[in-house]
Image 1 (cartoon, rainbow, N blue to C red):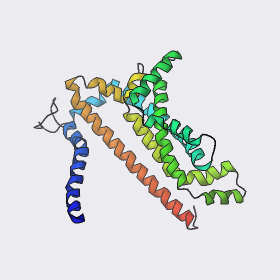
Image 2: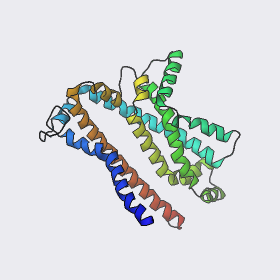
Image 3: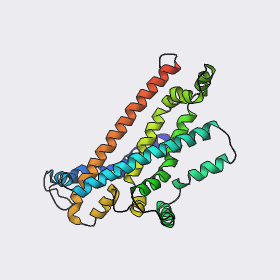
Image 4: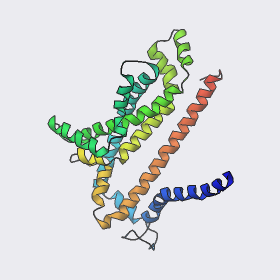
Length: 271
């Protein structure tokens, strides 16, 4: 019976992978296609779509806006997540579980509900819509992801290392800077990368809260209304795919490097 289940599991897994990643494989195909319509058969190889991207100033401004929003949102969300994860894994305080559950609520709420609620609040406060309001919304939805990642990093940390630092006369801040933070650094990097990716790809909140400075997803949405712009959008998607792969490769490099350092420190070697 188990062998028969394994026989069906392999083609099922392969079909799921094809279904998930087939659109990704089509990005470079149509990005380099020399045609104004996204369809088969292909017309030929061309880099015209990428040349159009370099010549579009509105796209450059949208990319800069998204990078600013992504960096600011990821840094703020990681700082807030670091504090919340540290408190939730190391200390007990009244209403701990309800408070953590309330902070994690944006994970289960529809983004359009969050976007409309933030829009109403900002209008009532008399604030103008800008990139700062988009950053505020992205921090709200990225912080729960940062808490989830960093909580796992703190839970896997050996508390005896911190206690040994205290016994040697180090202060709490010094222990966090010299011992705790280097050990949870892979989680911090993962939190930064995931928060940046979420902010870079997020559309609904950016669409509701952006002013006259659109982010990259809002710009892409505005271009989808024009059929002639679809090939350049595919080229842009291919470039974003390459950037995402580079970020993942960098995260894996730092994760393995930190694991090697942590293993040396546990074995009694130099850290």
